[in-house]
Length: 392
Image 1 (cartoon, one colour):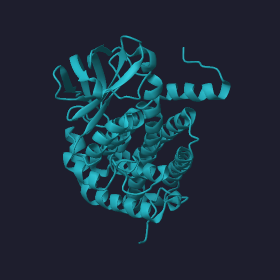
Image 2 (image 1 turned 180 degrees about the vertical axis):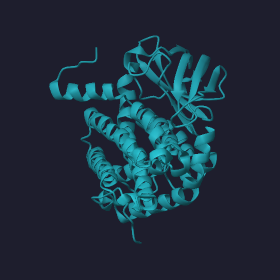
Image 3 (image 1 turned 180 degrees about the horizontal axis):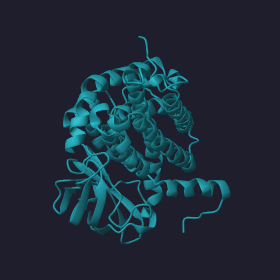
Image 4 (image 1 turned 120 degrees about the vertical axis):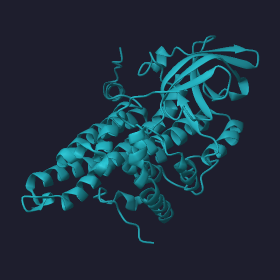
């Protein structure tokens, strides 16, 4: 098999992958190029999710690779990062769906669930039989979730009663289960619960009017006396420290997705630069257009080097919060800059969906903000540098 490097992988980082990983990545790329790319602009424009991709992506293993209970072969964190990149360079909404399913929902169960819970839920979610969501953010609590969580959990015998609300919860309009994080009224600690979405008192309402990630079905969730059995409490989630373990893993995936979005915009810009003729030749032959492309490629290459190393550290067991935080804040900043340069290259054509770049430009705004804002990630890294916490 001949494995082709992406045009944005200028230094050939994908050559670090094993042959089996390259084959799996090529299969995913073929599916995305032939089946997903042609439909995503229409779904994005209508604000709807392409449900027909859920099971084929499961068959390709994209929800399976990271978990011992489901992985089809031994694979590296660098490979799993490239999976996130490949998805995002085609469509950030599909990449976000996978990030919620595989990273946040399955990651919560894998990192903080019992052996029995992992065995019960992970295979069903890996196959796409069950879709998951992750309920942490609230209407009045986002960056301050560690202390500001308002959703409560009250134990009554072998059951827990949940009350509160969540906001911006991806997949939540159609998820089968949602991981709800709530504060135990008895000890004040944050705990996690696997909540079937057909439970009485649970309602999810789609958030309308978005300008970014329009295909992602974000929802407002209301929990009114939602009763959850003790067996559905994540048995190894005892405080927000355990929640943060999940976020540390997904923050690295978001960094890879940011590189993918920048790469998708860059690839669209390169293609346009060879076909659009101005002043008697393709615009790619003009110096200022080449400047935009070269600066974009520089951002992508620097960001890709960073996320590769962060993922290697994850495999080595040396990755810490500040490592994934620095990667997230840096790569999303460079992504934001890159998609703006690429959109600029298109002129007026860059504000329509005809050439994809407008979608990448818009979707970058959500990626820039979610999974930890620039400010919060800066404070995490600043604390590591100085030894001083500056959060309040």
